[in-house]
Image 1 (cartoon, rainbow, N blue to C red):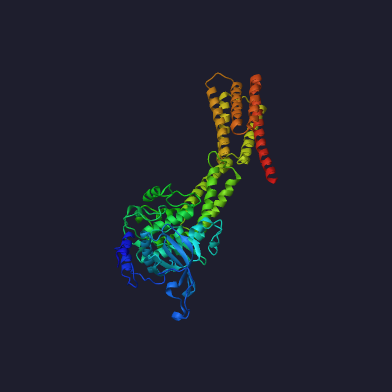
Image 2 (image 1 turned 90 degrees about the vertical axis):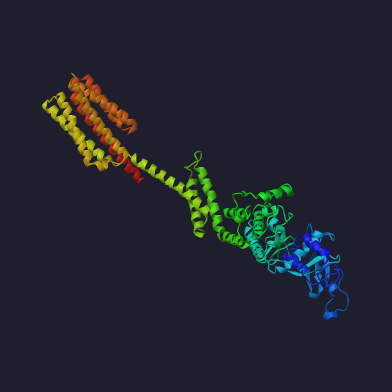
Length: 589
């Protein structure tokens, strides 16, 4: 073990970790500053292999087995070269330090090679070998991935790399969630081996041509529980513990997975700032993010939970995060239907505001569409709290409208003049006939009633009216208008009886009593015509004419009163009967 390699391990912060011990324990197989095999990359060649192909069982010499052709990727510290491995007739990728004298990059490559080599998983780029390049620095020989970074797909919904993934150019979220689920699988496997990636992001996920997904760039990976003395990672994605230097574990990568999903949903990194320092400050605070209304509430809750400032509040594992994504995918159609119904509910609530138009035909249409949507959505996913809450709001609106409609219907019923009309006609005709018979008897016999007898006559008639009210109570008291008619009739009779009782204490004639009755009845029917029905104005006119006759011809007051009462009751009965006839004609048309 040389001092140079030890320095590189310490620069990477892994000298005293299992990764560092693994690197130090590799047996020496060549000269120089390494315990790693000088092997096939002792000198990377840009020339085809030389020598007799029959030598070494037809294989080219190891030192010339790889032929590099072009740079296929480059980052801040590393460079990936495309190479041809002649012995196996395949293309491979060779990752080296971007700058040969960059000790930190070389150390990171050492760590990445050992970490990635230990993680044999379909979602992690396989490492074929690690050796020294022509500069004596570590180089990793890896599987060549024929694909593109996930970011390319995120930025271009029409990218050819989307072939085979779910979704359409106008909605790539299903494909993104498929990719994220595969990344979660790889991350969960790494955690099972005690490794934390610490740099999960769109740029570090490679999408192959045949549905294969790889989590790459394990250069800053470390063991679970490691505390770092320096800030490392991508500021726009960092978890708070990566900033504070607290121990990292599986929940750190869960945070990064959530930040990756955040960028898919918004197009921006989780910590968007003007500079790296501001992004790091934002990472340390990790405040919840307010998403646009068109982002599914389930995903909003999931991302804010995964990116919670407190690791204990996050999903405990990458597998738990993957399960939550799977649940969302399962319910996505139902959630989308619920969101669309929610938009209709919002339009409905706007129409029902005080300044809206609650009578618009669109109200009933929106109620029907929103209710249908919520029912269908909840049939597929009964646990959608947002849909349940929205349906409750809709149900409250429907109930208020139902109650209002019932109130309007009851109001229309109570004000319907047709209800109880037949009973009123019978009562009016009975009163009219009874009054005519009494008047005819008085005229035939020359009977002139005293003031006391004038009191008895309306009292007897009122008893008859009260009896008819009791007998025909179901018809006469069926709705509010009918009850008001009956109350008005009873009030008139009681006032008439009271007025005639008061006349007993006064020195007035029968003509005076009948004149007062006529004026009181005319005024009463005139007022009632304004509130109960205009047809009562005809009765007011009859009794006003009676009042004039009793004043002008007091000797004929009894006859005038009898005729006016009979005519008024007949007019009332006729008008009420005509109302029934008009209603029947209207029903026929």
